[in-house]
Structure formats: C-alpha cells, structure tokens
Length: 325
Ligand code: HSE
Image (cartoon, rainbow, N blue to C red; front, top):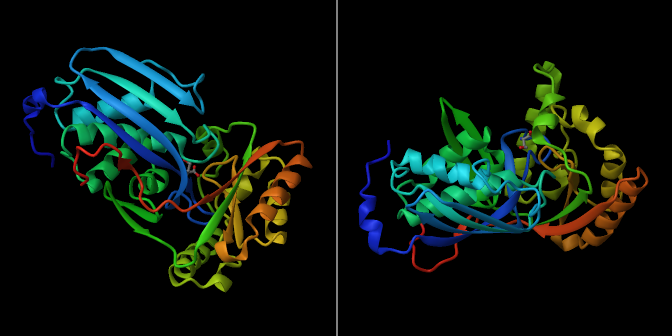
C-alpha cells in the first residue's frame, strides 16, 4: 500500500539525481530465475524529472546507437511506472535522461535490469523515497518479469529470490569464499525472449531433482566457504542444455574454463556470455579468461574478456543530498 504523498512541496527542490547500478549475472547455473549476483561493472544514470511533457534521452557507451530515445526507452518506461505507482505521473510528465553505459547490451549481464533499477531508484530518490526497497524490488520484478537480475542490481551481493502470491522475497548475502568472475562476452547479442523460447514448458522430475541438489549445494557451499562442495554445484539441467544450440562451442568453453582451474562455469543469465567462477586466492582468472577466449575462437566466436568481482552495494544514489533508504 503506497501512501499518497504531497509532491507539490518539491517545487523548491532540485529534481536531478545520479545513480549507479551494477551489472548482474542471473541463474549462476542451477538457480534458473531465482539466483543472481551483482558484479563490478556499472551503468550511471543522471535523471532530471520535468513538469512539462518533454523527453530528452542521451546514451554514451554500450548500446549508444541502438537504445531508443523515445517513449519506448526502458529507463523512461520504468520511471513512468514508478511515477504512476506513487501518484506523481500528473506532476512529472517529462525527463532528461543521461545514461553512461558500461554493461554490454543483450549479452546476459543484466543491462535491462540495470536500466529498470536505475530509472526507478533515481525517480524514487528524487521524490524522497516514497517506496522502500521491498516495494522497489516488487516494482522492478513486475517490469522485468522475474527477480533474478533486478534483485542483485538493487541489493548487491548474491541473491536468492522467491515470488509468492505476487510478493517477492530476496535473501542477499556475500559468499564467504572470495570469488573472481571471469566473463567471456561473445561479439553477438542474444535476446532473452529468444533464449526463453527454446525452453520446454515441462521438465522431467529427474532434472528438477538434479537442479534442487545443485542449487542448494551452491548456496550452502558459498555461505560456508567450502570450495570442495562447488565441484558440481554450478551444473544445470533446466535451461543450459536447451540453450546450448544458441551459443556455438558452449560445452568446449565450459571444459576449457574448468581445465584452467575454474571452480565452476555457467551461462550468464540467458547468454550468450559465459561466466566462470574462480577463487580469488587461486589467481587463475587470467588463465581461465584466455582459455575460454581460445575455446570460443575454435568455434569462430570472437569474445571480449571481463574479469570482475562481486558488487556488494547494489544500486546507489551518487549525489550527497538525498538520504539512502
Ligand atoms: N533467468 C533469466 C533467464 C535471466 O535465464 O531467462 C535472463 O533475463
């Protein structure tokens, strides 16, 4: 239930704010649509809410030439959804949006979740936080359709999310084991819609059991810092086998990462990025990155390598003037 706020008092205030939102990797192997993590690659948004119905959208960096600059823009659509949710859509009818993007687009690193979270986090902060973090999570999940990217984008860390009776509950934690995240970013995009279309509507009981065990093992081992229990914990039977046809050489890249010392490897979200998890103390991340790149190249796929860590803050307001909720 959102209380009706009096936004007319905002006349005197600046309506500009900057937020920074991390990229995310969903699923982490067995946690399809439930598990995700935030990583140290970011998009920045500077938002000015306008009373007049004017829309200016500028994007620099990733996707600068492909992102719509009109009503279809996902940042703007998310802002509008928040304004409607808090009864402020009649007051603020336009915006100046400047995005500085580092998260690759349509690659499985949560660029759309980052856009949604940036928009609602910034608009909410300008309005003095009428929605709390749980309400923002619910709104972001409604817009995205599933919580596994928006939850870590909002909260940071590794997250487990459950949707029950329309409500979203997220548990965010920082693994005891310090991880490096080695991401191979292919030079082709893959839409989440297409990657979901190849999935079956029903799955065999044995595949459900396969994933329940591994997802539970993954979370338990990471919380306790038990590296040896991660050996099989990133495996999946629910989505990766069906999506493999969309990513040439996927299994070879998985094998290459493991042979180079990765603890585990998975598709990042709906792909096409593949993400390997290494322990920080093993210092094998560069070797894992080049092995993955070479394995992809053997299948004529060129990649960029990213070596990232876990982001533990999630979306943050960068201006000092606004309180964080
Ligand atoms: N869980 C989602 C999927 C993440 O794998 O389709 C991508 O949005």
